[in-house]
Length: 288
Ligand code: HPA
Image (tube, rainbow, N blue to C red; front, side, top):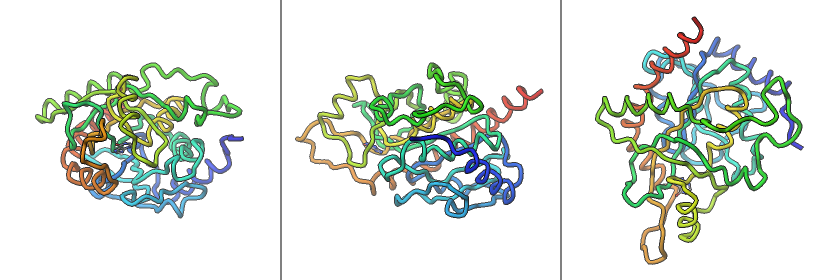
């Protein structure tokens, strides 16, 4: 049974505090191909996941596996360069252990990024999408990160997931995109288990369900972050257009996902670095 191991969370948080000091109240998770964004951090302290007690690490190419404490756009931020996935064999609770550590470190705002397949015919590979909501197919099927006894000290038994993706932060990011002349899509992210890409029938099913993008991460992290009371901003990069018919000669590949991710780094960096000062200002306002 999954229970949050508070001693393990404390040990991991203490290790990070010892090496990185007070890490700030904003965290950023970088998905496939977007890891190089962390290289832009100033005053960076990087800790390989393998050196943090109990921290899960990703085995996927394109996921670096380091926690980087530093400043992006002048704002102190804790960056997870890569994440652990359900398809790697981690339970949803294990994969979201880092979110509990962020909670213990006092993180209040979580910005999650991912690579996703686009489900809309009028969208292209390379388009960024702000996540307005999600469909956690894995969670709804029973692999839920909050399954098991609830620790009321961490969050409520039955957390609300209405406005899981903070509408004010969505709007902020849309403003940043507009100011910088970036076309930013908005839509619903569906999480599937992976690791196979979807069949054309599954792609059509996801569209019928109301999803605009599909990926293999994020929803469990956001669920735990909301349980922990964090505000969440989600940003997908559409790395490929999901294939709807067998007549389409194209095949999705992980290499394509990583390559499109790397090419989109300037746009993703402009969005993230553009919104970070707003996130920081909202923190200070709340503190005062
Ligand atoms: N499907 C699922 N996950 C993904 C995809 C996709 O097409 N692209 C990037 N991550």
